[in-house]
Amino acid sequence: MNDAGWGENRTKLMPAQSYSDSSVSNIDRAARARLIDVVRQYLDDEIAAVSFDDELQEIRSSTEDPTVSHVVSSLWFHYDDFSDHHAVLDRHEWRLIQRFLLVLESDATICLEHHRRWSLTQAVAILALVGFTFCLGRFGVSAQSAIMTASCGVVSMLIALWVYCRSPRLTLREMALSPFKSTDQLRAVRRLAPSFVNQPYPIRLRGRRIRAPWVAVLMSVPAFAGWLFIAPLALAIQALPTTDTKVTVHTPSV
Image 1 (tube, rainbow, N blue to C red):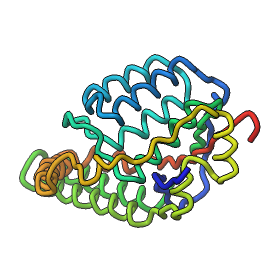
Image 2: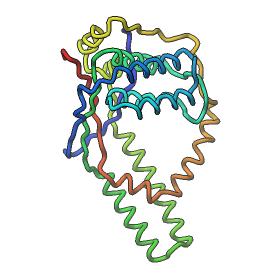
Image 3: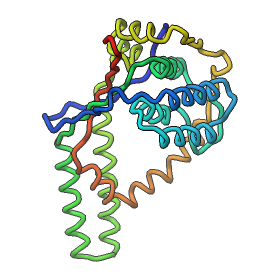
Image 4: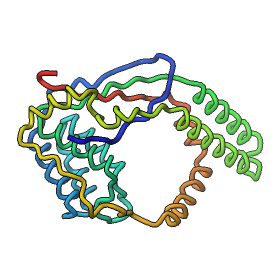
């Protein structure tokens, strides 16, 4: 398999509480087969994004297979559920989805290990919330509190930007293997699914896009305006411990 693809963003943190998904052997073959079929329909342009999203959510709600749930959650980043479009994927995304299909066709299970931790960004968010609460208590609903709300929105955006910039990126090799950790593990899972067919990237997807770049910029304006409006809520979320997730693939033989 010629692979390149998706990876996770992680941040360097202080040690914290950890817990793991213990549902390693909970394999729902019916749900996996249905998910494989729906994904292939989307990749073959037989269904568009809205129907694809409806099918994915229905499949996730009908099973307790952690691998199915993780794949559905991961696929959400590769289509737009606000626009009824056909598949818009680059080569990396396509190959990542092929690896997900490989896992689904095998006896392998994707497991998640979660690590919770605190960092400086939580302290900044808490201080900004304290300042907002003080301003609201002193001035009530007024122009001053509105200015403070907008200021908190700017602080929240800066926190998000800081976290994004500080998050290490996966290496090219890690991206090419994700969610697997090694080529040996990928080959082992491949042997568990001898009938799996790795579909090559179709030429028809080259240059395909959901919307023009300028439209995407215009659509982001209301989002940032809303961020300013709900700044205290955004800061409250950013004040909570951050959860980092480590993805591993387990097989009967690996």
